[in-house]
Image 1: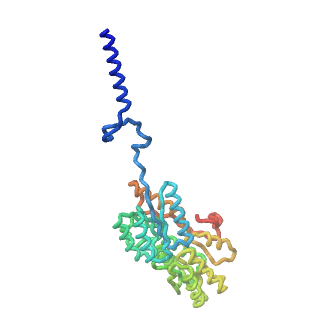
Image 2: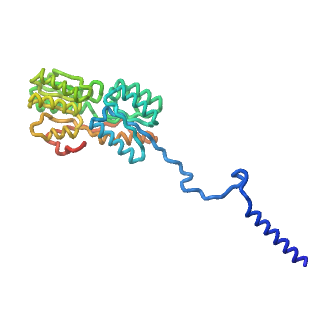
Image 3: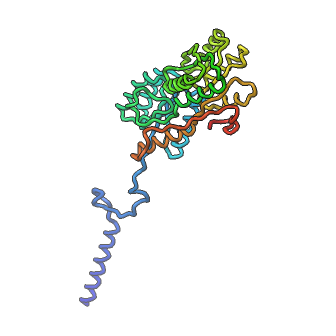
Length: 335
């Protein structure tokens, strides 16, 4: 009987323990009430770095810079990055303001084609002070020590091959006019290369006019009208880019000067369409590839920020497009 009572008491104690355990509330600190759980998937995986890039071209109404920007953006967005694009509209002052805006918006690196290769130094200092990497694209800044990488064309060679072509077309020499833009070093180099080439001609070329167009179509058109009025016997007009060449072509058409030959630099679709015309005045364009340049610049910037190897300078090939080979490159887009 005693044994039965003992077993009954033991059973009652066990029931009480289970009831208390079931009714226990979590109180106190989380450590007091530790709950075991399975780790969530990717809980210990760090989120990958993401970067913000800025793009500042010379003029985002220029098809060349539109294409360059699109090529950069395509590579970056394919890799999950974002890019802020601003249009300085050929204003060096506005470009500096917009670069400060990019810094304020958290840009890690900026793709930069300076409106004015000297005035841009103020913005370069702002970028360096903010720790923003600088990828100089297409046209160089004057103070290259600020730049982390440069991607562009061999602009002197672009001008040189135009000069060589002119010598072949006009072996007796003649009067030449130049449409330039001293604030853009890419155009400076092209004009230098052109003049170096024609200086080697057996029969001389005389540069009778050189006009600062500020890289703008309207200014180039007015300058070209003045040139053909003052020098009706001008043989050729060398232009710093294709946009200026279109302006020169418009002026010589208005003056009915069918024998003038015009050179541009870029290889734009508009100029290639002109080359397809039987009696057009465009002799050729020293072509660049803004698509190749943009992709190379984007890959360089990503490698730079990721601490991977990259080239400090990349020069994309230039080549002459004329009536004889324009069909190889097509007229509906950039090469």
